[in-house]
Image 1 (tube, rainbow, N blue to C red):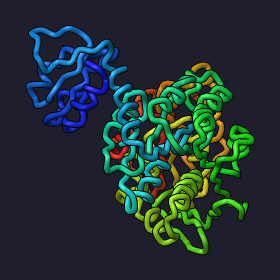
Image 2 (image 1 turned 180 degrees about the vertical axis):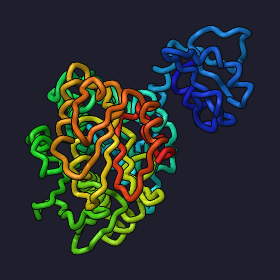
Image 3 (image 1 turned 60 degrees about the horizontal axis):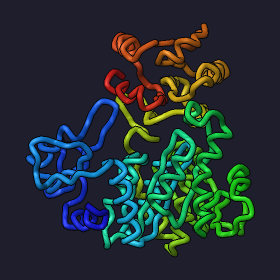
Length: 427
């Protein structure tokens, strides 16, 4: 079946499904494969549960006229998403970077959605499957699409750009993330800058933090930019006003009080304001949008639990985000502070060095106890009166079940695989 025919069936359907456990009635089921599953084996089940058609790439018995056999299901999904994006012809804003992608995406969405029909990446569905699914969730009513792009190897951002074809893009920062896949910090810069390369090649607009020398260097002489700065009056000017307990910023003589913690979120806020200015929103509309955003999903959340104040930032971690989180935590005015830090993954040969650097930062901290959780930290075990090391989460759990923590400011941060939000059950 030709791609345009599949697209016609898609338009007549209720959307896409990839998991038989939550099939949407009248949807197209894409029988994707993974290391430990093969969607083709669930094709009959998908139809039985309400899918209109099942797109497969292996013969399934018994046959059914509602099966659509293609060469490769994933490639078909990606090609369909690109074709659909081209047919819609809407404006696409793409975001990538080492840290802050999802928060920035949510802030941009919060600013734009009261005034435009927008669709944004759900959660962090930002890979070679998530980006196509995001594009396919857009309709003829959608005015602006906000697409988050993640990567852990070179050429992934370039590939996602070919599917999403963004008109505008923003890179949050270059940091020490996914070093195992990128090979080095230089590899990170080159890989994330593939978004810049695409925008330059297609006359797209770059949203640029002109205070970030690395970003300015990567953009070079390309002049289709829309900039923001804390110091320059020639750009969209946003100033940091207050950091405790939540960030406040000044924009056009207006104080915007956010629900975000950590100075590291300042540029995320500034980028969202800048994109709002570009779309001709008023200062009041921008203020209302930013102030309405409340972080969730274990990102930059402040939780009051019993007598403790918990800074939950456990969605992910890498050396760069860990550093800024600890720097922010240092400014918390409480004599009782506890940092519960989990392993950072995908660091390759740099893992031991980067985990040791985090531990050494703990040595310099005052009035703070550190719980280091996971095998990577455990291997760098260093004796210190304020340190405790736990090889597994279960070891930490046993410890927490036998102590009482009260009147304490607690930072919880680690890579997604550590699932440190579970700590909340035991404090």
